[in-house]
Length: 183
Image (cartoon, rainbow, N blue to C red; front, top):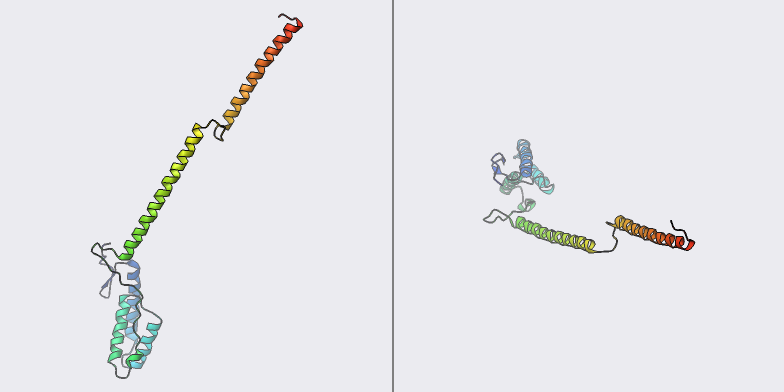
């Protein structure tokens, strides 16, 4: 995916639209915090910093950069003990991109889709083969099937009717001969 130059927030370029939108919200929050946090009171800054870290308020690089600024400020303040300053929790994983521009996760997902496609193709091929065999058996079979049931029954009854008419004609002819009727 080509980088979109319009997806830049606070000097960070985003290639994902959702992250870009989240970063814009965080940039607004950082501007608000900068205007309301008074750096002259390190104890208050520490309390605000701890609350932001525990509530995991920031999820993009824009918010992490602001937290890092506050963290650096707190490390320089002699009134604040370093063990009171919690580390910044990072909620996203850094993706390792190879020369082709794909990540290991994308490559693995692509391989899974290929495997699923191959299985699907094999199952579909097998199903088509079974259906063709069934049609071949039905076509070559002489037994009555659902497909030709009505025609076979009609032919069978028509042949019986023809046989009965022939027998009846023979019987009538013999009766006439016996009765001495010569028409």
